Length: 536
Image (cartoon, rainbow, N blue to C red):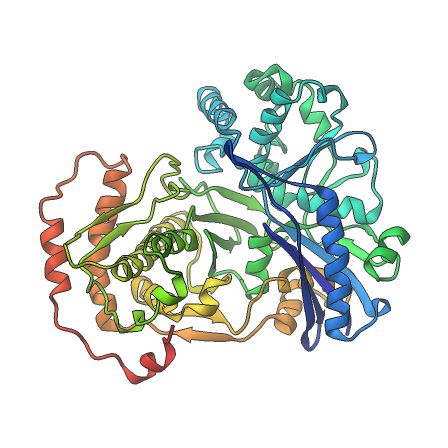
């Protein structure tokens, strides 16, 4: 038995969860840090490394108090973060600037240049990240920084993902040659893959921009999975965190990937980490290229398996926007949604309000709602948006299955499924299969699992998951609702690829009439067990 610390850096705060790796969570605490925005540039989003580390110290001490354990009891800690959140560093790995946070969108033109040249050059890596390199990813942000900070370029030693920077800081690494880099972070956001020898070749990177000359060497280091120890906690940081020096810290990863591990993900599972957006994580023994899926990387989730990442560019953000336009909030607008039946609104919503991340990979799309009449309400639109995100999720899961990824169980993780049973039931009805929801928030449990492995407390990942992961609540699909959603999904699929510009001309004259027919279907009584299970 060991007490371990799981550290989860989010967009606005860090959460530390202390876990007895035989009995489960003991206590937790969070600490906030500022997000720096600029009114004149809405694409700007940065954070300071010092703010992150100060917050980590506060949260760790708060978690120790919450769990009523001493720092000497903690045997290991592990770190997950947002991504791609990138910091440029100089000598001694000192930050030259603040992090380009994952939601910093300044590097759009850089991403377009990388994408265009990758296709012109036939770079295989571009096909394995969905065919489009994102402005949210590492090379785009690094190039933007190089172009806009000429006075600092000569001082650049390397660039680091947030999870690698925190691990290096806590373990006292100051030499870039001693760095251990996360395969999860570098594989999904920097086009790293052993299939083509690691990062894209230097000649390609230099063709993107001569400012990238030599950058491949600067990004050197040991690229490893999270079952490898990055180092051990230094005396300085042990004192600041209230822990004992020398405890192991494994190589980190991205939050959604470890949330999937914390939610009990195994081969055959797909985990929807549903929050402001949705990150969809799956694993397979092996898989081929999956067109439109934004990352297929060996070892990125479970070190022994291939990790697959996809997602929706907005989910909770869409729900919040609908409520905001109605001058209310999602909690209030959701009251009564449990009385809605499948398709009753007569609305069909394409949830592209923030573009399409998977499988079209088009950032310039916009949300579409079909079927409006004069009596529709904001609550009707909210229910249609929940249905729309479920339909989009089904598109993604079908694409994964076509690529050889087994899809046997669906797990809804993240914050929203904990508080929105209607969403879970709609997903079950649309997907036609049970949806499992952890009986509690799994955030921090994934990092605790890897901390437990670093401490040597469990022999393997499966054993650690069995001991630490939470039990599930199950939402079974309703056959009558699923039958209705089969009809609606046929229309959704046609519209998705039609408006998405990949299927050629489509006939739309029947869609609005069919939406009205479906809305007019007689209501089916809600089974008592479902009615008990789906209060908002």
